[in-house]
Amino acid sequence: VQLQASGGGTVQPGGSLRLSCAASMTNNYCMAWFRQAPGQEREFVAGITSTGATQNYADSVKGRFTQSRDNPRATVYLQMNGLKPEDTAIYYCAARPSFWCSLLRSEYTSWGQGTLVTVSS
Image (tube, rainbow, N blue to C red):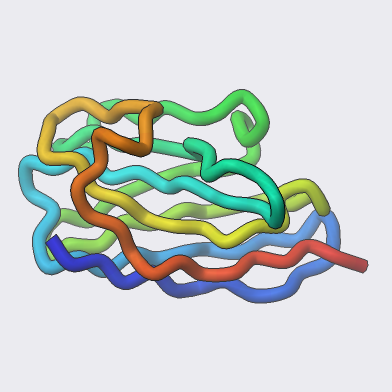
């Protein structure tokens, strides 16, 4: 699966961004977002099951971020509201050939190139 992430940019604290991940296919894949801040490990942000029925989120983004998917368009989205400076990172979309998502990076077989999100006043 080939993935192309987009939508990053610079916003002020409290602002919003919507990231998109265009895939060559999404059927039967869990789709997830990870992020990596400078000097830190890549961490799980959000995941959505292959049918879109279930989403799970890192505690740090719960209530602020919402993931969705459009399987006919093979695209997943991450709506980010209430952005904080600590959300600053490169955001990566990833695909796992399974109905269910995982918190572990090693279980994802495809990765997008990343899109930079900067939250700063």
